[in-house]
Length: 178
Length: 165
Image 1 (cartoon, rainbow over the protein chains, first blue to last red):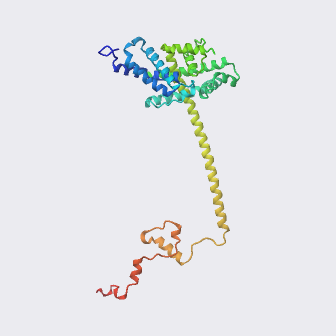
Image 2 (cartoon, rainbow over the protein chains, first blue to last red):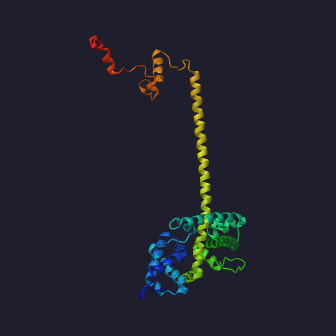
Image 3 (tube, rainbow over the protein chains, first blue to last red):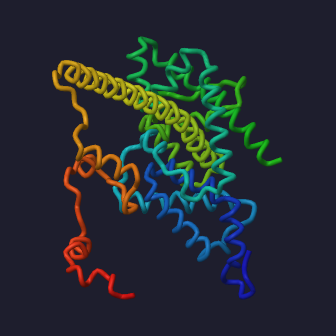
């Protein structure tokens, strides 16, 4: 993975990584930091680091190497920014048009419509947990109290709902890849 | 809070569930430490699960925003409808008052008199190619005579052009 001089990586290789792994890395960074500005900073630093030290990465562990670098950069960005507590609401507030192409936006809109329909098809008890946890950003403990249900029941409902939603998104990705 | 459990029936594995609990800030201290150690090591399964969870939450939350937007738009529409009803009702009341007052007036409003007749016919003929723009101009009783016309009328008899032949 090195350029002619054996010391540095070929920039076109890093560009290929960017296209191949950029999306998941950005999402990963958002999950770690919950801060879109820290994501930008860490994302840029990750690829700068890839330019500097990418030649040390092995092909078979490249993805793990990039995630590791990204995590370290996220921690650095987080310390500088004194990151706030995690919140699903903040994840949902991220601007979605920043880097997305029209095709990606159309696909995302289609997914949102599909997921919305799917949420409406969920059993009412699962819908209630999903709405309270993701839309209203209430903790599972609070939801359990509000619904007067055991915490374990609330967690099981959420997990079942997420599994169905996850499957639907995976199906969409398979269709997109064809 | 222990979040993991075996559920071979679904393809939403423990890594995905832990990733959700992580981004939601629901992991207990010990679970959080262990999970972050996996992320720091570049554990691909854990890291990819976090990325997938962020995408999933984004889409689900997006569907919630659509609900909110639709609800807001419906609320605004209802509010606008209510405002329109008030305006229409007020206009109807005003119109009723005007009609009522004009019926009660003993001297009905009308345009009369020679000046008014002349003015109306002048306006109808479009003299000068100008159209009065306001009611005030239409109701102006005095005919404005241009200076050149006054000067022509006042010319001495010897200067009226009859001597040219």
